[in-house]
Image 1 (cartoon, rainbow, N blue to C red):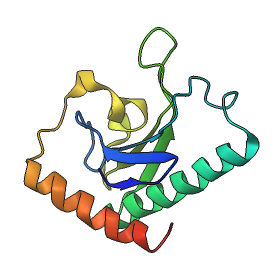
Image 2: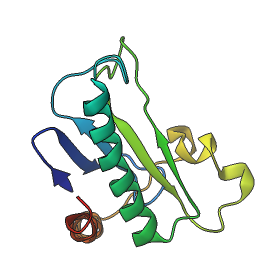
Image 3: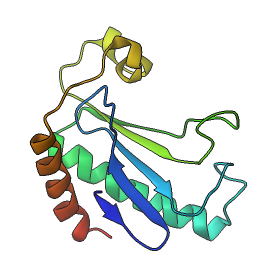
Image 4: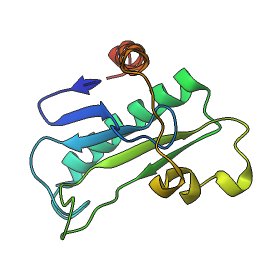
Length: 129
């Protein structure tokens, strides 16, 4: 767990395709990415998402940060956002959706390295949220 408050949780992706891949989800079960939120709830979530993405970008020196909400009603229906940093120097043909495709490989990052990254993000977020 990287961050949690009464409404959200932020955690590392168990199956990252790029280093520093993070997920943000509301605690309350929501299915529709906009329709299940009031404007105020959605904007609060997006403010946190901005802080998380900036913490990841700054920590890793990412060339770009991809932010997506994926899932479907048939599987993985709980709304969540993916925060996936693009490492600097990634060849163009390995960017965008190619960087996120599990078919291209899942990174095997040691637990200790994941913990240390989560700790650094937690410190960065403490000053932003």
